[in-house]
Image 1 (cartoon, rainbow, N blue to C red):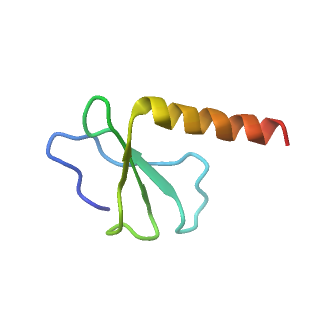
Image 2: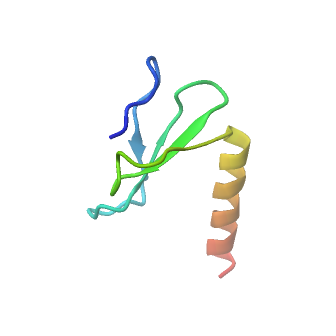
Length: 68
């Protein structure tokens, strides 16, 4: 997995990830920062966002799942 800055938390795999290779990994290396990466390409890009933006995305995905 791609290294995070020193002192950061470790990557956590999504609870919805099956045994396959395409999983979302999340880390919070510093206050106010959420990092995401894909396990099928651990040396690839890291998406950095704010906790508020991450929460809005998760909330929207959950709403869409319950509303069809």
